[in-house]
Amino acid sequence: MRISRRTLLRAGASTGLLAALSACGGNGVRSSASEKNGIGATPTTTADNDSAPTGVGALPADVSRTKFGMVGDSIAKASSSSLTNALEQQGFTEITIEAAVSRRITFGDGKGEPLSGVRTLYTMIADGMVPDVWAIAMGTNDVGKYPDANAYAALIDQMLSMPDPDVPIVWVDVYNPNQLKGTKEFNLVLRERAGARGNTTVLSWFDLASDPTEKLLRGDKIHPNEKGALVFAGLVSAALA
Picture 1 (tube, rainbow, N blue to C red):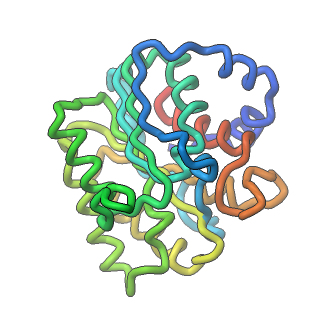
Picture 2 (tube, rainbow, N blue to C red):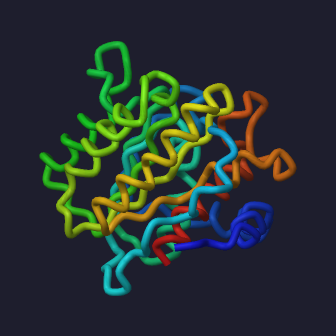
């Protein structure tokens, strides 16, 4: 699935969209993206990844789109309000976004550190959550911390294997300029593993966030500013339209 870069960036810059999103209500939506940490509103970045495809496959046309579940880090947290509103506009009525600052894929037990993505996803599934689409925005805090592609593949496979294989997954790739080599490697492996699972779409936040002319990031060059949050939300919601 390839989503127009120009369309997403125009959406982020549109004051009309800003007004429309801010006017949306929150009925039927549960979001646990905590507001306790101010920095939690920003996502991390990775490196230039022009050679990688924007998406792997496409969501089935007959996928029901009313229930949405997401596990993410600070990037998802920063964008959770905009994403919730965008999904409501598309008819989603049950939206759960579990996002936390500094969250990693397998590390973290919730005791003085964020609960890991794997344990968060396990808890959501154990609690009986059965969304029509799962979304994952993880990896920013893991790039550069593993020795090779096989290690990244093991992380990714662990998360991809948890949901029912019949349920589509959308995974947003990463952009972390402080770990550019690891970022590129992670994103390439992510596409390979997504292709192996099937029924999985990879979206390129990297392509958007890594372009300095678009000014989607805060001063730390990792987390999204207001426009960036809208563009991130547009990236995910456009994949589900």
